[in-house]
Each structure stands twice: as C-alpha cells, then as structure tokens.
Image (cartoon, rainbow, N blue to C red; front, side, top):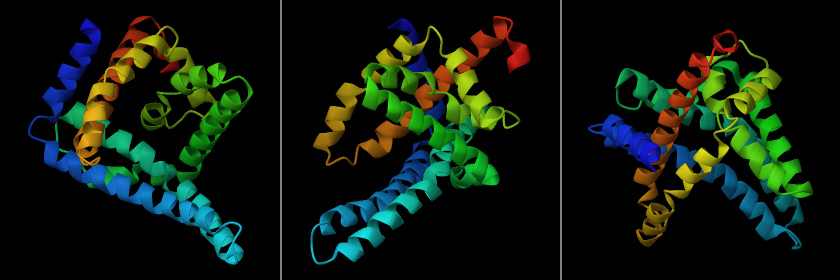
Length: 220
C-alpha cells in the first residue's frame, strides 16, 4: 500500500491549486460523453415501437458520435499528463489533442476495445487481463506518435508486465470514494475522476522510468 499511497500523494500535490481547472475539463468530458450515450439510449427506448425509424437514427447517431469523441478520452489523459509534467492547470484545449492524428488515435482505441470485448465475450478473464495490459495506450499515443497502432498496443502490454495487479489494487483503492460520490448525486465525481486520472498518470510515469532503467530505452 505504500507505493499506492505515494502515487496518490503525488497526484494530490499536482492537483493542489488546480482543482477548478480539472473540475472544468471533467465536466466538459462528461458532457460530451453524455451527449453521445444519450442518442444511443434514446434509440434503445424507441426500439419495438412505432418509432423504429427514429430508433435506428438515434442509435446510428450515437455510435457515430461515440467514435467521433473517442479521441477526447486520449485528450483527457493528455491534459493530466501535461499538468503533471509542467505543473500547470488543466488546459481545456488538451481535450482535443487526439484530433491532431484522428485516424491513428481512433484506430488504436477501436482495436483496443475490440480485443478486450472479444476477450470478455469468450473467456471474461482474458478480457480483463487485456484491459489492464492496454491501460497505458492513451499515454503512449501521446509520447510515441511514431509507433503504429499495433506497436502502441504491444508496447503497452510489454510495459504492463508485472504491473497489472498493482494497477488493479490501485483502482480498487478508490472504491470508497466512488461510493461516497454516489451520495452526492454523482457530483463528487467531478473531483474524484481527476484525482483518479492524475494518480494513474503518476503510475504511468513510474512505469515509464522503470522500463527505461531496465535497458529498454530503444523501445521508447
């Protein structure tokens, strides 16, 4: 638990004095994701009714919007990464960082989610293992844009060897806070999510340094 607490302390230190900016970009992120999921949900509601055409339109729009905003997930990661490295407040423009190489980012996320989905459908456990193995993909898309989609996913799996359980325990450590946020009608997630993401950012930085120190600089 010592290492986990250290990462959390580092995250809180970075967020100190910058909470307002991170709550702001988290709200924007939630809003954009909510719009996309909203269309899909409306499509589900209208299925099997006289509004079946409307259901198809809403569902199709929801899927399209979800694909279009996938780079926002990378941008949310980048905002925390930039803040961690430069000790600056969150920059809302970082949310759209992934659109600089839209096709590359979209391809990486789609392939990653597809692999995890297949793993979950077939055997469940392998899907969960793959999800943890690909946890560093958003960070690597930023730090190594020269890598192909498959190379990015492969590098994430290599760097996560021996660290999947550590990440699992790290995520598990936020459950108490997540339950408390439910009591705030989910408003507390505007603070919890940046805290979690910044902690994961510190986790990535630690893994990256360890990987370099192990003599794998050529692959980074």
